[in-house]
Length: 120
Image (cartoon, rainbow, N blue to C red; front, side, top):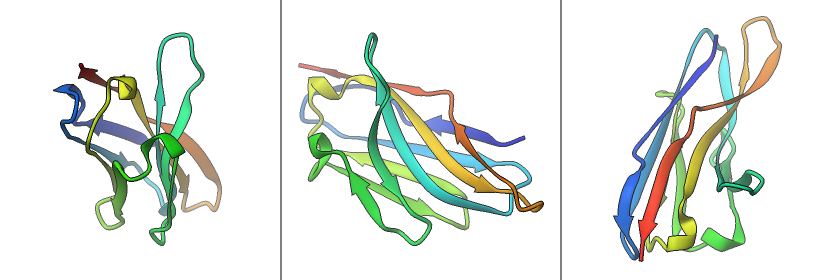
């Protein structure tokens, strides 16, 4: 079984910063694309930032210049540094990872989510 465990969410004032972390565990051969998504009540989950195994990152327009995604392949961990937070960044943030198993098969997996609340 693959597990994605997020941490780092919380309550912060507008303009502040938070750093999210997500650790992938399980009997897996490799972790490929990793990403962060967010969802607010009544809305679809949306991509925030995605990073390839090689470190190429892509961001949603709403967070460009404020958020930075990074990863540590040895630790099977992805991070999201969030600066200059705005109230509209308030959401549940989910970690996502594509993994390959020793069998050669692969799967896409989600974490349980971590709440980020930005007060004005």
